[in-house]
Length: 407
Image 1 (cartoon, rainbow, N blue to C red):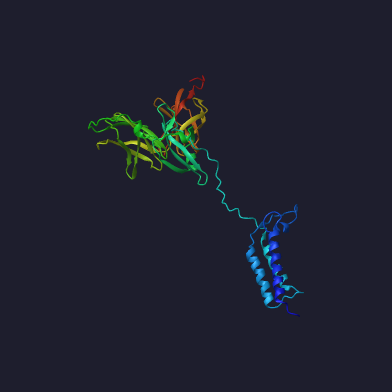
Image 2: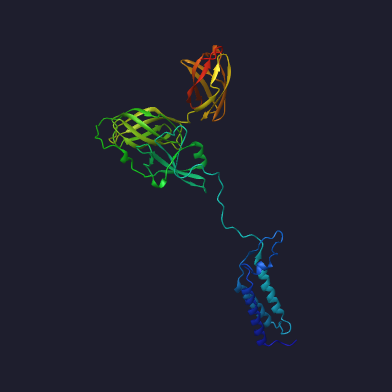
């Protein structure tokens, strides 16, 4: 076989490289009409997954083809009549093009947010428990973060005209959505967060009072009970209170709970206690004036479960000698409860009270005279035995005379 002239080799390599370059420019793997799309199944074919293009490196492909052609020329394999190496070069290029076509779907590259039930509250919603809905200071929702399923909340207070509101602190906290929505079931109102001012508590205080040098005296605190994990507004009455007085609750084995003082006069103090994460129990109240003199009242304030609330009952009447199956509806009922009816000093206790859920109690009421039943209006009370919290129905249960049908 005659040897190929070097100039012929050079010309053959040049033609091969020119052909490879033309193929790349006119049959790119990516984009509509590209090489990969032309190699895809025909439109309308069943179960066709559109190919995902991959990037093919033109310099590396050209370099591989060039090196193969030059190596073939050096070994004198290529001839003018039988361009074997040119064929190999084409096979190399086409194999790279085919490798660039993939039927694997491209990765989305993003991580989907976790899915949660829709948030019950939005920014600006003022929330409360059923027993704290009328308080002058409550939680306000500042934000809801779907990624963490948490609310950010702060404390909002009423203005002097009774409207919401203003904030006396920039304090905020993040809490799980499920926890907030379980405890705070009442939406009291709504405000636009961006226009709610944060004011200093001193702006709400009366003008400075001169120190009398007399120690403060605590007479009472109202309310004297609050549910844990809530913010409660209290009023402390007494004498000799001074501007700048501090208020705190203390209990053996627990950290002191410092109040946010809103307003001070010589006879009363208005303040807030944040009971988030605080322990149940009976606390001592301490008021300290700026001059260091103080007063304390042991066991005057209690933190615990929410008191039961009676919303209604059925039936609302019964006759002497009857046994009545009562169903009481409401909130905050515990598993161990006592249902009783009172008239003057007489108590009728409902038998077998069953509270399978926090909103309903069923029991049997025996209206036998030997148990104390008599015609008239009776006060209904539910007592949660474990924490001794009780709730009284605003209406009355009527016991009628069995013969006349009247009280």
